[in-house]
Length: 81
Image (cartoon, rainbow, N blue to C red; front, side, top):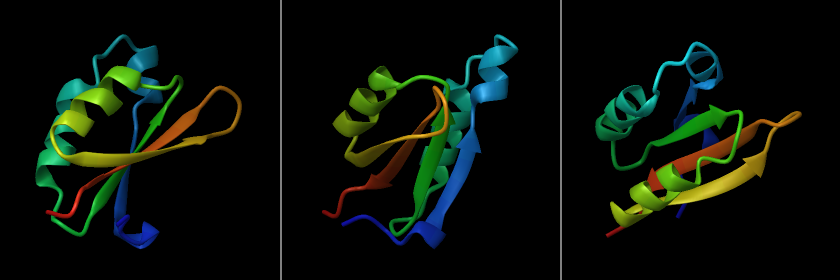
């Protein structure tokens, strides 16, 4: 079950990507730091399908929403055991 929105932290990777910085390290650092009842919202300028697949294989559920313009919001949280 998805945690309440107030339990989600937000990471906007759009500026990192604009600067040519690979955002995987900061994303995985935030994911690893999540408690069982927390989630992470990634704001990206495209749908990060490989990230969704990778985290899905590691036990994370996700929900995708269209943001403004070309942006996407992807919510990640740990699936209950």
